[in-house]
Image 1 (cartoon, one colour):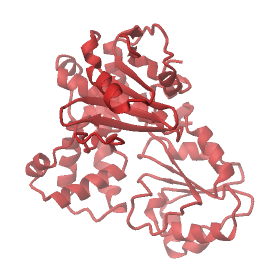
Image 2 (tube, helix red, strand yellow; image 1 turned 135 degrees about the vertical axis):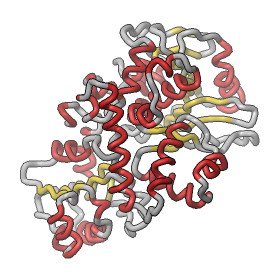
Image 3 (spheres, helix red, strand yellow; image 1 turned 180 degrees about the vertical axis):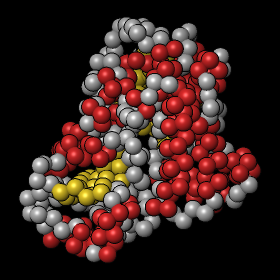
Image 4 (cartoon, helix red, strand yellow; image 1 turned 90 degrees about the vertical axis):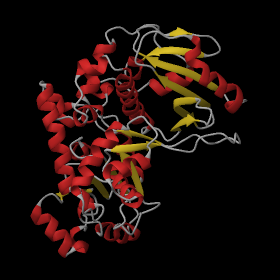
Length: 412
């Protein structure tokens, strides 16, 4: 797949092509969407990239002709957000012919949020999210963490991934091109060039953004808020923009898959439950480059090391959540400041809480929020509590609470 890496979403993409008329692979630029698309289609399928100037003009001038597809093949349209009205033409085509696998489209923006797309293709399309490479994909491991989480079945010990090693993985991130760059300075330059190019070229595919200088500053500011509850008042003051402008620009960046929100778990009648979402950067390598962090500074700064570790866990965990619709990802915080970094809900099987700690030393009090949540919120629903930490051993703290090495996210 991407530079030889086996992507976890291959199986879901192949399955979708057998069952849905249209399949959409969405994700940030430079993460391997095009490579994945080429790997799952047959030899007789046509591939049309809207990054090609001639094909872009053809799609604009004669969209009906552009989407015509031979009866037995899959037509791949790459970067479809550049000509959004193609979606309407695809709808007309698949309404006349209901065979599966007619179109495989890719987009570097969230096709479900673009205002210029006036047809969602509901009932005809399967959306598949592709993210930067996970550690498991890089190592060729299968995703098993969620199954182990709900079974409480983790390896007793995982060696080779101490805190320094996990920081190395976090600073590298998961963009395939960056994995080939050994120098941290060169990686930082790649990440910054990537953001500059995205702001200049891709934002107009989503909205009419006029203040590119503000957007560039906003990317860095939001990187600093990763793993936190965003304070919009502070950000509007820093940028000297209105709240509607901040919302429009941050939503645009989210549509480009640079940031993501984790919604609160509010399925309770507890009146003090928090209802704010948390924001995460989708790649820790990109985050550290934008914040101009150095390894030695992060190691000695508890706030930075905690932010880095939690964001790293998010990007690994979210990629596995994407694979199975039985799982949903949330977070919990209430007015009493009881907080659980991640709540994983599995349909018909209960809940699992995940806290992230950058250090190795844990005590029972670190599980206080999870124990309270299990007794007062989960109540009769099955609940398992886990703290992911930088140690090597899986350790029980009683009452179904486990300390588990972070490396369990990719170790089978």
